[in-house]
Amino acid sequence: MPYTLHRGDALTKLSELPDNSVDALITDPPYNSGGRTSSERTGRTARAKYTAADAEHNLANFPGENRDQRSYGYWLTLLLTESYRATVESGTALVFTDWRQLPTTTDALQAAGWTWRGIASWHKPVSRPQKGRLKQSCEYIVWGTKGPVDPHRNPVYLPGLYTASQPRKGRVHITQKPTEVMQELVKICPQGGTVLDPFTGSGSTGVAALREGRQFIGIELSDHYADIAEQRLERALAQDDYDLAGPEA
Ligand SMILES: C[S@@+](CC[C@H](N)C(=O)[O-])C[C@H]1O[C@@H](n2cnc3c(N)ncnc32)[C@H](O)[C@@H]1O
Image 1 (tube, helix red, strand yellow):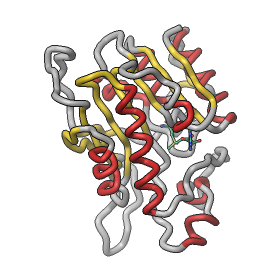
Image 2 (cartoon, helix red, strand yellow; image 1 turned 90 degrees about the vertical axis):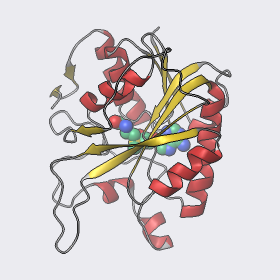
Image 3 (cartoon, helix red, strand yellow; image 1 turned 135 degrees about the vertical axis):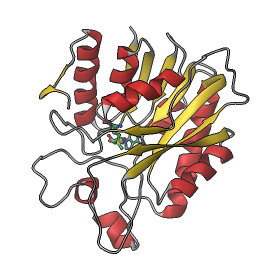
């Protein structure tokens, strides 16, 4: 089977993966961003946080968005440490984050043992202008390697800037990443190698991995999103470019 989807908590399931068994960690954890007060952090669902009041969709909430800043940094370090152990020498980590959590994410990556190599950007052309402020039109991909980069293992030239809108048509997750961006990012994993995403969500990383000839190991805590990911992964395997609600945007 070119993919495995584990249902459950990322830290618990990661600890069950063998050492040196995956080629690239590519993941989009809950950002735990914003929320200046305890009640803002614990009282607000991911849905309330990421969904505009006038949004037309009715997508399900997801867990893991209520940690305070210190525990988020600690938790992310544990996750990246377990992922490091499971990754081969010269393997890669690509971790999505936003501007608020960028410093914490680069700290956690390095504390976990990875060598920090840089930051790529996902530019979203359709983002809300804010009066008197610079527009927040990017999310970031913090990346690093386990030890040295081995250019012979995977001789690719990849961009550091990706422009794409968040999927609209066929969107099935609140923070769904565009498959076209993920299809470029999974090329950091050698052909036929294994991509790990412990925060699978609706399975965008896995769909991209399968479409690009990589294998995939996913972990997802929410049964609702694990079901969706499984359906999308099966469709990708059947080389069906159509998503749950029709063609992807
Ligand atoms: C930011 S979303 C990922 C979205 C994904 N990139 C996509 O395109 O659909 C993070 C996901 O992590 C899941 N999650 C939260 N806490 C988790 C945990 N402790 N273990 C495993 N999954 C978790 C959430 O249910 C959510 O679906």
